[in-house]
Image (cartoon, rainbow, N blue to C red):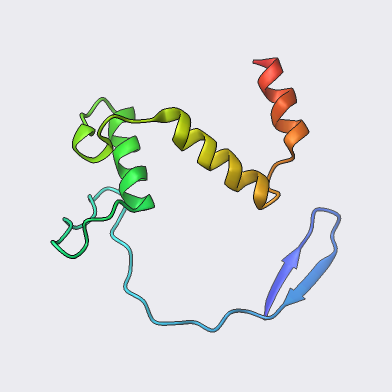
Length: 98
């Protein structure tokens, strides 16, 4: 069971997922292992690693290619809205304030 305490002090107890054994992800400072011939699909981890590298001035064009920032931003915003992590009106108000 997992106990979740909300901001108003209410505690909710939820059943926990069954733990499945999985390998530990690489530490954040290490790049992901190189792709193999069978595994040449771009993953979200690859994107995050490449974007972090670009933010520090590195060239990640090998991974990102011609980065389509609009497409990445649209995908991220769509997920946030679908999962109801943000409300559409909150985003619009924040965008207007910028």
